[in-house]
Image (cartoon, rainbow, N blue to C red):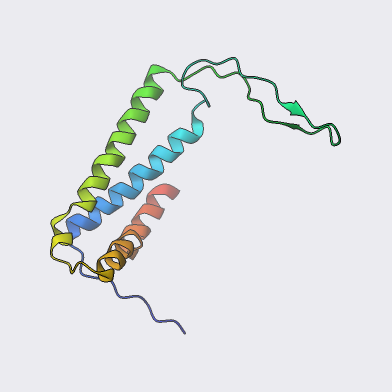
Amino acid sequence: MAESPTFPDFPEDLLDLQRRLHQARHDFGALCATLPWSVEPNPGWPGTKHPHTDEITGGRPESPGWTEEQKAEHGRLLALWQELSIKVGCHPFWAEQPKDGALVLARTQLKHHPDVIGTAAETVAA
């Protein structure tokens, strides 16, 4: 039976930042999945019919472009994601850690910490 991993004692504010980072990344991805493929209106183009299978590949449907609200929300979520990434990466906790492979492991463990993943998964499911 595999042992449960042990995690460093991350400060609560760092765990909270990582939770918020996970949520911001999720929200950004969810928004992008709903956006038209082109920021600006675009007429699209037809695909190419394969000569042997008649399968049509490539091409794009017409895109209405993004609304001003979609552009604003995209910019807001991208800026939030970037801001939280910087705050997590530059947190004072990391300065106290040895500069070796353990630091890389600790950064990875933060991303997969049960208190972070559990909260993020609950928020995404809601």
